[in-house]
Length: 424
Length: 149
Image 1 (cartoon, rainbow over the protein chains, first blue to last red):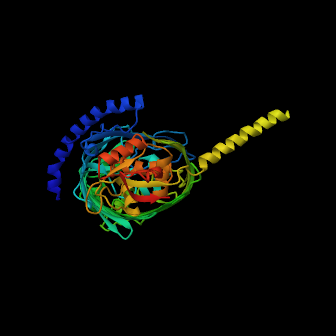
Image 2: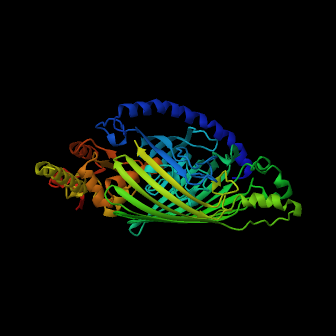
Image 3: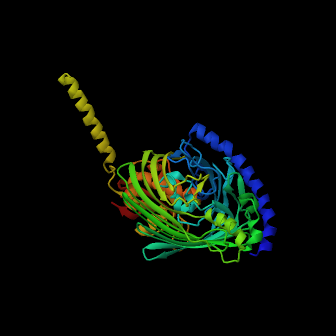
């Protein structure tokens, strides 16, 4: 898809939001009455003797997190990921982790289903949405091939599309060193998945392509429009017994320019055009491995983010989490780190402009390690309570992962979090 | 403290420990069978296939025939089935399926309201696969695909 095509298609994407919103408003009263009456959450059509297996059915479900977090350091704000404009300091705040999602699953034919999900969470503009995060049709062409079209979750990393579903995950939030840079939650497009038995396991191959549909925060209330950015990628995933292995790569080509004047107070792109981001690509490569057998659970991932533009610095990050379940209580220990590469300024820059360029690239420096210690307690069938302490040790210049750093920022921070995750 | 009150405190604690032990002990139903209707065209199902189906990693047989899966309502048989087939306990299964459902990757098996309802659905819809306690093993209208113990 070339740029011209991309532009032509965008208005279609925008128009496409209205029916989705109408769908949501149609679904919401049903969801509310369902919650209030606390009927079983899976309301399926009554079986008929003819073929009850394949009568169209709809089920309404939801997930959410009520979470509070604070740090021990007023010199920087901790954010869950860089789409958030503001983070937490030393006062307990519910904003970075709390969210609510409702979803309708519709089984249309034995091979076709539709999913619509609405989500309210702390967003790039400081509001809580809500937004339509999923709205897609899925069709299985055969036992091996399936395709989706519509709005769907980004699959950049192994658990990227479920990172907001706290109940599905062990930790309070995905390791920020690794997932913090991931500012895409969903996109509008298509994907194709092939599933092939291999040995005793299953090999899954997926290709996806589409356009970003979100904005992100740059600094305070300054936002950067990611909508229309071309996203394409794929992965290979192999599951066998307790093991899951994932190799993936995703490329984004940005549709809009970074609001540079508002960001740094000068049009740095006029001096150094190679810093421009519009039309340039960023690639996210990742490898992940997960092991879950009985009470033992281990997951590890590594990635690199490579930018064509000189504006951002490339990064590498990795994490490992180990957990051991004892009854309904699962203590876990995690380690993660992120490293930025040196600024990659290849274009000639007038010596007078050097400080400005250095100021820009210094904003994207990350060099820190985090040790996370926490516990998940499955206190009731659909409720998990979690407590977590993150100890971050970083260089004072490591400011990319944070918001609102002061000159006294020393790179070290401890973050305390308590959450209640639920599904209904 | 009088000895009678001490004894009652002790008794309370013994009761609490017993309750905890009962919670931690494995479920009562030792065996579960994976079955389909005797009229079904599903003849065999390997353990791996069954696990992949019940974990939502695939939704049809190798030859492409779609399969309808049945779940029992939450309870000891269901917990034991998933423990035997997947090694996951009830909360792990719920967390796992939350991931599958809320990413739109798979729809969970259809939930029957009781063991009898599951048997009825199996018989009315050949091509449906479900699990039952092994007390149904001698039921001539059912075809056993897997014996989980």
